[in-house]
Length: 281
Image (tube, rainbow, N blue to C red):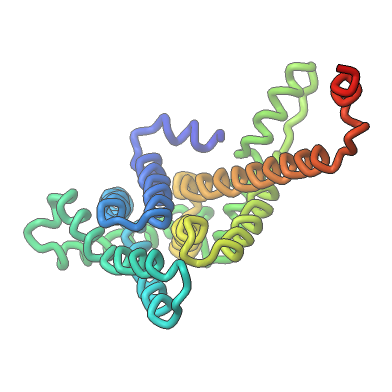
C-alpha cells in the first residue's frame, strides 16, 4: 500500500502502533480458540505496548472487558456444550484493562512517579495537541466524525490504493498512461460485511468476533478522535482494510473450492474419463 510504504520509511511511531494492533488481533483470535491465562497475558501485553506508542489501544481493553462480562453472564444462564470455553474466555478478558494498564506503566518510565496522574496528563496533552493541529492547519481541520469519514474516503479511495498501484503498473507496462483510482474501499466494505456474517455464524465468542471488535474499535476511535487530516493517523484503517479484503478473498476462494467439490461429487460415473479404462481393465 503506498501510504504504508511511505510512512514505514519515516522515524515515526505509527507503523509500530499498527504492528501492535495486528499482534493484538492475532492474540485475541488465539485466546478465543483456546482460552488460557498465558494467551490472555499476550493480548494485554500487545495492548499495553501499543498504548505506550499512541495511547488509543488502551481504550480497546475496556470493550474487551465488557465482552468478558457478557460471556460470563451468558455462560451462567446457559448450559450449552460451549459453556465452559465461553466462561473461561470471559474470565480472561475481564482483567484486560488492569493488566494492559500495568504493562503500559511498566513500559513508560515517565509514568513511574505518579502512574494515574501522569496518565491523565498524557491524555490531556494528546487532546490539546490534536486540537492545536486542527487550529494551526485550518485546511486540515476535521469538524467531526462525518468529516473524518469523508477525508478517510478521499485518502484511501483515491490515490493511496493497492489495487490502483497494481493496475497502474500493469497499464504502464503496456504503454498506457492512466491513473486508476483503485477499488480497495469497495472490496474492504464487502469484506467487512462478510466478516460480520462470520461473526453471526460463529457467535460473539468466536475469534472472528474478537478480531472485529479490536479492528472496528480502533477505526471508530480514529474517526471520533480525529481533529487534523494527517495521513499518518490512517495506518490502522489501512490494516483493517487489508484484513477485510483478505477475509473476502478467503471466503470467495473457499466458496469456489466447495462448488468445484460439489460438481465433482455430482458427476455421473460414465462421465468420469477414467471410468471406461477401469471397465476395460
